[in-house]
Amino acid sequence: MTPILMIMAFAPGEAAESSGGLPQMDVSTYPSQLFWLALTFGILYWLMDRVFLPKLGGIIEERRNRIADDYDKAAEFKREAGEAEEAYRKALADARAKAASIAAETRASLDEEIAGMQADMDETLNQQIAAAEARIAQMQTAAEAKVREAAIETTKAVVQVLIDEQPDDAAVKNAIEAAQAS
Amino acid sequence: MTAVLATLAGPMEQFEILDIIHLDLAGVNISFTNASLWMLISVVAVSVFMFAATNRAQMVPGKMQSAGESLYQFIADMLRDACGSEGMRFFPYIFTLFMFIFSCNLLGLWPTIPGLPYALHTFTPTSHIIVTFALAMVTITILLVYGFYKNGIGFLKLFVPSGVPWWLLWLIPLIEIVSFISRPISLAIRLFANMLAGHMILKIFAGFITALLAAGPMVGWLAIFPFLGNVALFLLELLVAFLQAYVFAILSSVYLNDALHPSH
Image (cartoon, rainbow over all chains, first blue to last red; front, side, top):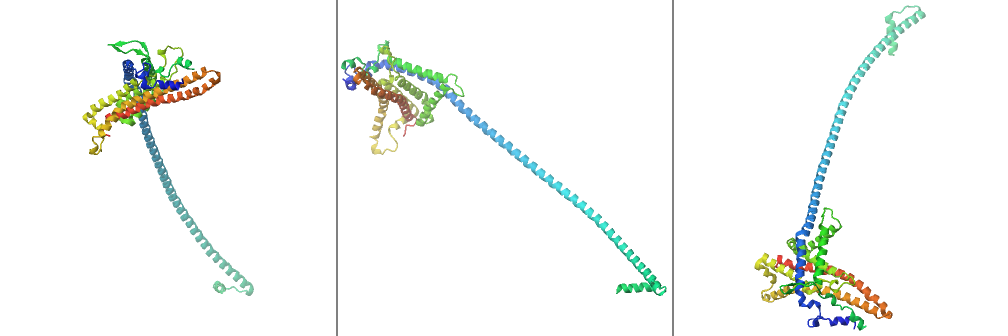
């Protein structure tokens, strides 16, 4: 007899009648099984409901809250950091603007000063140039007069030598002016 | 060969209920049997596991606590998917149900230590239909009691789906009632039959091994095939042990959903 055939022999149909049939169909064991199932399952349920699950659920809940809190805190810190950065940027921009305005002011005042100095210098130079020009003109006039005087003297001396005659000043002067004009 | 087989335990002997301590309560036999012993072992095993998981519960969990929390989340998610967040009131029951069935199934696969007396052989309480049926009836009782408590007479809408044409009103409730009654039966038989069949096949293959070995050196080497078959079957049974506990728990959740939302 192979084991397969042995199973056939234990088919539930026959089991009900034969005493050695399917043990699951033996009604006389039911009260004991039900009693001990109720007892053991009941105890396990009580332990789960009162002890284990609240503890496990509690710690899971606590962790979830903690994580949520930490997220909130992180968001808060991030916001604060953003604000600080914003303030820093603003301060930097202000400082830059201030620096730029100071530079501009300084440049303007320097330009003004330079312009003033230049104007003064120009005026002084112009005055000196004018004075120099006046002096040059004066010297030129003086020199011309002297040259004419010298020419007259020279002419008189030449005439004296040539014709042994003292020409008068006015005639010489006229002659020279005529020669100069020609 | 027949003589050899006759001395071997039949595939059904592993399901026999044997008294360990005989007890009587008002004439009813409530003996502490091998079935009781293995229910107790399962409950103790689960309790020890849960104690290890929750003892010194910490914000950053250890290994045992992680395992416990994973199971907790697994069952909680399953229940929430089936019943919504209101269904969490059934969580202790569903969790206990899952853990109890799973540990009974799993510990029942433990190989018997050779030489122990029959009554101490490894036993699977969930391979008995009275146990699985009782568990199924607990689910159905919770469903009925809570359903009527929460919805009053409106709970009967469960048997009259909305949108049924008037001329079918006599037939549909009948079908619904039949399907309702078949729920505990299918729950009970599914688990029981899976456990029964798995253990029977394991035993039959084991029987092949001994039979072939006993048949002499000529065919003895063939025993390797049923042996390998048993190894594969055992792995499958480990999966089945988990799967059937899961199926029982998820179907219980789905049924309990009807207590919360009877009109479907």
